[in-house]
Length: 119
Image (cartoon, rainbow, N blue to C red; front, side, top):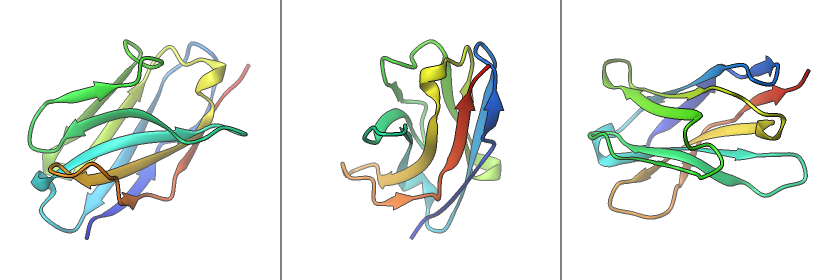
């Protein structure tokens, strides 16, 4: 079983940047795809970005493409989400998640970290 702990959320002005981190531990991480999701107030959870742990294949939601970058640091077992040009509508609780690369369901989740974009 994989355990996930997010950090790096906070308050930032529109146009600013934040970097979220997801520390992963547990089973062989090379078997997993890691994802970031978010849930804004009053809205359903939505996919943000994903990355294969043992490769560089990345996928982004259209709403964040060109502004967010997902990456992983294998040496530190960490997945990063660099968020630039932040907008008010990016305000949400951000969750790190993991699924087996061969599967389709994210079944391991972190506790979430709040990101607030406001002037």
